[in-house]
Structures are given as structure tokens and as C-alpha cells.
Length: 171
Image (tube, rainbow, N blue to C red; front, side):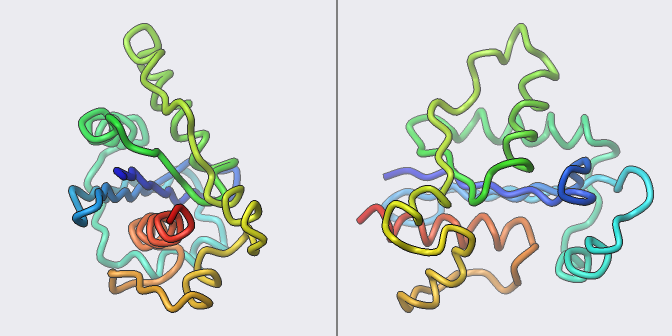
């Protein structure tokens, strides 16, 4: 099974994204990973400043704008999405907006590039009788390991944690 898992960090729950992380795996392990960041638009949300930015010190600003971040991520996405389950954990409102904005940057060319289907790991957790709000709780309960030195609210950690939980849930 090939999995494309991604996560984004936004300036407030409904704010603009400023960082995206993704991991692509197959049955043999990691195939590719992506992490990039752009400047935060506007005043930084207090919760983001206290709970997200401290965990992202290793992610330098590599894109000059949100549009550049979306285009960079699109290139990675298009290269690796084929035959993959495209997943995110609690995908609305953040990751669904990333996908929509990414496609709408060039709607004529990208219209049919969206993930069909797009799988929210929260729904899979709920269907299995687990807490849909926490992949970390599921990972801990099942003695699983997230192979990343980092914490929740780092977009690559969140991508890998969702992939670990989803792969285990689908066994």
C-alpha cells in the first residue's frame, strides 16, 4: 500500500497556511518527504506563536509566498500521488483548503488532479471505535513508533504520525 500523508500549519485555524509537510511511503518504507515554509501573512496568531512555531525551528523559510509554497507542494504532490491513498488527519479546514487553493492556482490544468478520494484518518479512527481527534493517542495505545524527532504541530511529524496510525488501522 502506498500512502501520501500531508499536514499544514496555518496562522490560526482558518488562517493562511505557512508550512506544509508530507511523507510518502510504501510497504518497504519511506519513498519521499517534503517540508517547506513561507513567511506568515499578517500578525502571527498568539496560539500559533506559543504552540506551533517553537516546534518548527528546523524548517527554514524556503518559499517567498503562499502561492510559491502551494506551487512547490503541487510539484511534489503531482510526482508522488499516483496510486497512493492521499491522507491527512482532521483534514478540515486546513488540508482541504491547501488542496483547493493548490488546484485553483491553475484550475484549467489542475482541475482533475485532486485526490479522489481524499481520506481523513479521523474518520478511520472513529470507524474503528477510537478517538478520532488524536493519532498520538492511538499510536501510544498500540505501542507504535513515529520515526521523527519532533512533536505535534510540526507538519512533518504530523504527516508521519498520521501515516503510522493509518497504516496500522488498515492492517
